[in-house]
Length: 220
Image (cartoon, rainbow, N blue to C red; front, side, top):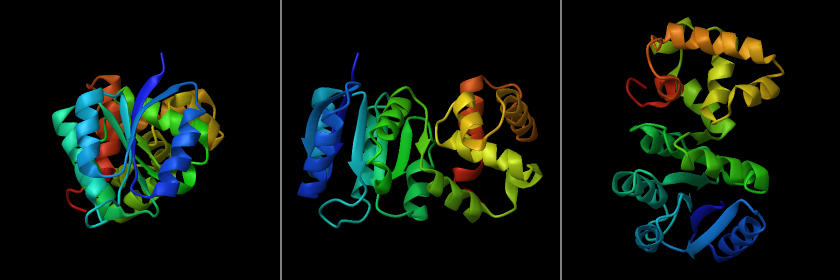
């Protein structure tokens, strides 16, 4: 069954171009395309989509309206995944979006949207409660946390595995991305969980909580 998606962007050319791109994906059913946050919220309430794709900068102030809309969608419709698009890595906005958890949330740079497979993967991941963070966003968030906190005991390789995990990839995809064996990935992830004190948690919760160890704003 196709993933039901609502898309929001105030720029006409971007909106029409990306809508046309999404329409090419058999896995996507684009149920509505809107141009402002309030219409987006109304559309989500009406259509109950599986996922939302929204720009960060929308009317009236063209600052963080997309972030605020994403947070309101999470509060009102917790089963709806949200992927936020940004022209640049904006760390403060990323922290704001993810401060309440990464489950069902995504943050991608607009330069990625030309890769339809990557976009569909991100929407699918957030729709099922996972996360989809752009690698450059993960890198910036990780750098911002510095060397303190719970990540202090992680090796460089474990940090790399954790960073790719934050983009929503499973173990096999992490292995391909980092040119590692599946067994090596499992070993590093197990070590990350142990060092972060997540040995008793459910597997999905452990992955989310491991990501939160460095994307959450506390102490940053």
